[in-house]
Image 1 (cartoon, rainbow, N blue to C red):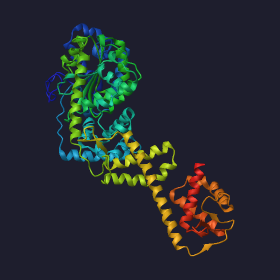
Image 2 (cartoon, rainbow, N blue to C red):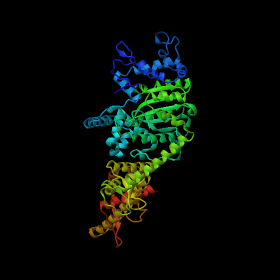
Image 3 (cartoon, one colour):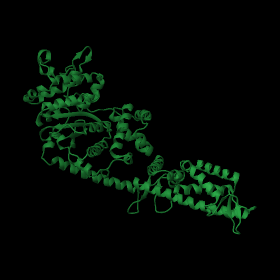
Image 4 (cartoon, rainbow, N blue to C red):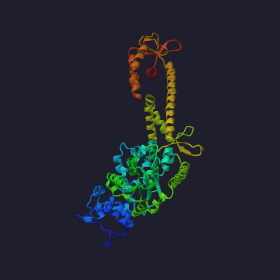
Length: 583
């Protein structure tokens, strides 16, 4: 393996030697060693950039300027952060930065062990996070091997760092797209018109070229930024970033980020989205191997260096701030393995970037259309799916949904609209925990497609109403059967009716009926807020209290009265509670 300038690292005659102080590599020299490439650019540039280069590289006594410049102080602070890294860690970051390919081999047994460690770390930190919600909805989606490997590769196979990044990734996705899209790949159809406009303006530009190690190059062009809301820009960037991530299927999954603030691409670096964009970049399943910020003027370069101070040490080791003209920056970036043509293409003509983005956008549409058609054509239901086929389906998924709804009918109708929606969402989550989906025929009737979540909610609400109607019919049939049975089994007719008796029929003014209504009204609040079992206990207690003094009597066909059973009396009391609720 060779260094950036083609010099063998183990060569005794190597021209570039890292100075050692007290037995340690001087991080300051390693940090500014990229300025050795100044010999490849015009002398005028060396003079122009004297204000932003580290002092000891500019000459002076003992290699240090007699005058201390503000940029020197910032460089010293940057170097102090790098001192926290070991030599091996710093060397790896330098390899990334200068486009030295990582030849790490992925052995199957090692990857299996690391994936197991990743799973252990996720179990420790997932509580209450968007990742946990995604896992409940569709565990296969979050556990897919290639998906998790992306996070391991992005963090140099560190399971703990990978787990933390997965947590951030799903938190970001939840904030941008909501729970409904938490376990699906985001498509263009998930973006609105304002999102697409941000996607096409070219402020985030994926270059056609790659660096010397074959890694993608993403340009951020501040002058082209424009959005209706902060969320529009973030969703557009998320889509483009994930498009890049899905193409990174090898261990060498890094990307190079270049903020280009030169010429007619100069624009404001401030904005409400700056922090969110940075978090979005760091949350993606990729490894940022180099971050280059290019400026034409010293004040902007100084501001960028100061901003770099808050970056983590490992990220700081891969950040470089450059200052120069468009031509000079081509040479500087070229020393990091970035093709000059990738910078040159930005200035081909005024419409190049927009045309490039539009062409890329249409390619995405074609690919997603083909992929979606393939998915629909091959969508086969499994045993846990709920099928809406316009007729009764006896599949396991439909039976399970029916059972879940039947267990919560009382809870549903006793709750307010917010509580009902929460219950419906819990039932949807229960179906999805078993990898079940809600499917219906598509417009052609030949294939199945997933039902939108809002439509699913409407269908489950209708299921609850159907179950209530069915329960009412069954209750009416039970009352009728009980009435016929008791008529046939009556052994004692009642000739004299007492004031304490409760009479069936329209006997509203009877003393016993009035007393029963008073008891029901006094306990209606407790009854309505109770569970189904507790409601039965309340009704039974009232029946027992009435029967200590009187009876529940039903008129017979010959004008006499007969006492009813306790179960029929309980139905009478429950009906009084329902009537009280209506009043």
